Amino acid sequence: MKETNYSVGLDIGTTKIVAIIGKENEYGKIEILGIGKSKSLGVHRGVVNNITQTIESIQQAVQQAETDSGLKIDTVSVGIAGQHIRSLQHSDYITRANSEEVIGYEDVDNLCNQVYKLVMLPGEEIIHVLPQEFKVDGQAEIKEPMGMYGGRLEANFHVVVGQVSSIKNIVRCIKSAGLNLGEISLEPLASANAVLSQEEKEAGVALIDIGGGTTDLAIFKDGIIRHTAVIPFGGNVITEDIKEGCSIIEKQAELLKIKFGSAWPGENKDNEIVSIPGLRGRDPKEITLKNLSKIIHARVVEIIEQVYVEIKNYGHEEQKKKLIGGIVLTGGGSQLKHLKQLVEYITGMDTRIGYPNEHLAGDSEEEIASPLYATGVGLLMSAVASDAKQKPHQELTAEEVQEEVSEAASAEKAPEEDKAPRKNIFDKWSEKLKDFLDNAE
Image (cartoon, rainbow, N blue to C red; front, side, top):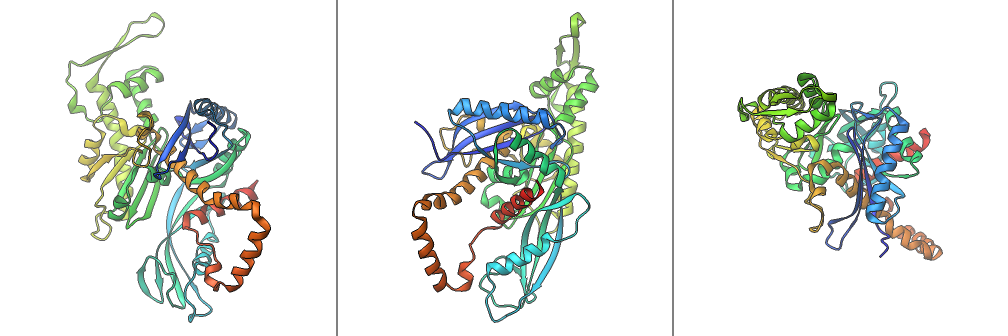
């Protein structure tokens, strides 16, 4: 059995690189065909800092996924993250030449393109322009201005900015690993697609993705992304603290954190002790679990408080911006024991752990439904969605001449606004980013 219509999501993280091959089944769910995972070398806090090592790690993960599925990987969808990502709010407007004509997709495009021309700091590039809400001739709180009459079209935008060099480095790694670059997504958005329901996005929810090197935050309200932030701390900093605090090697610190770690010191009794083998015949070390959880607790509180500052900056306290859906924790770091209770205690907001199983087919392996793979599954979902859009074009190429003739004929009859292809804002962003990367090379 040889699959042809499959897609690939590649999550280049600080701790691990994951390649997931999958396709959409007849029920609209994602069926996982293969998965490959390798230790991430050369990525620090979400940013590539060693090209050669990153290429090797990508090739290893891709090879494993190919062996697992028996398929060949050609094009991958990747995510952008790292501490260089920042976001800002911006308002802009255009004055339309003819207010007697209804607002079309072209007008919204013109408005978005105007925002892309904003002057940024040297070395920075706008990678994401998302309209929040529109105003038409002063009438506010319009979600969809298409088809309305008006002379002045205004909008508030959520603008995501990243460093040109960091983005180009990721592209270079993908191409040097012998792969083609497909869709590019902001990692917090990919994780959100995998673990959040539409109801949560409407009600208002903060997604906290605790990775190895960074903690990503994405806030949704009324179904629209309102705020994104990347905090340059993650699970690796907790491991580092355990290593320093207990005077043990990193591998042991990581194992201690996973097996015995807890974010709540009160849970452990004083007489609970774990023994760590000494190096090269040295005496074993005895560590009390209470001390271990105190070390973890101190760092986790710091991370959560920084995230909570970002949530408060968005204006969670205001009635209009209240996040009824509370907080959803995902990523490898969210598996720390008693983290959910600690987050609820610090923020006072309802919290749950986000598993990417909502969009997966029922027979998927249990391992893939772990928060660890939330970003990978989200990237695979965006790859599947983008491939589905391109498929009709590929099937039509056989009758190219006939198609062109009929298209030209229908275009003459069609009204002006219907000629514009109806793409959503994410498609437009992906195209713009791809154009920018092509020009940058």
